[in-house]
Length: 413
Image (cartoon, rainbow, N blue to C red; front, side, top):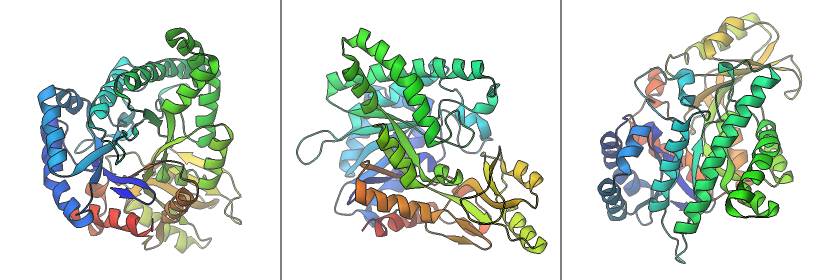
């Protein structure tokens, strides 16, 4: 839906199912009721997630036309897509396989190009008759623990191979814009333990690999000048600002945006999501209470990376210690840990979980900065963990989605 801060929807990766039949059934069950509650008199925005199988099935012309008709008849529209999870995302152990196949593979390239072809058909036009921009978020190239990451030669190989594949998608986006007049962008989503984990790493990859390799390729492929090629790359490759991920890494939103602006880089969309956090008291009994509270969120489906801040004192001081998953952090807790932040997407509208808190303040800060700077026009609620939350936090799904979106609406006024 259109809000003062841009188009707002929720990511449909919240719904289980890997075939288009399953995806579509879930949308038909949830979306009309949500629209009636949240946007009865205006079009309702959707952040569409398609598995690889579902994308192949939806691209069949009769299925795509039927979906277009359903969107029109329900006064709904798709403005962004989530192309991070390729395969099974519910009712299975996902963990690090959420990155597979990664950007070293042709399968990831073809899947992403297919999503953009679908999006180019689904993107609506605005009140002036111009097609709105659309984005597809994707993985941070790969998962760093699959490689000998401390070896410079290994890192260079991975960055070179993945960047070449990203550029294949950029070339597709340039062609699609010529054919359809749709401006679309690939939005890389930094994540703890991803090959790209932080804003600094995104910028380094962009300037050290994507731009030099891309300028060389696109000038030859499309007859562009160096300046034109650079402009196309910056247009078609952007950062997906997942608030949870940046909060887990203790990165301040204004700092991230300032760094991107300095290098002329853009945010494709904001994924509105909250992480868990807690400061550890120095008293042993208080520390044990915090540890037990985190243990309640130790579930086996998704990776829940933890970044610990060591040392007591000012919150900005102390080294950051990274753990691949919550069990690793629980096993390694020691007296020097002053704060934990855990990659567990918890409800947006809840700030306190007993002795734990959420990173809701980071969301409010990002929304405030969006109001001031308008650094994107796409906002997507992405809480996908309803099925694995502790029992006392599980609620009826449509009611939960409504509360999430309503909380965002209230905080965008």
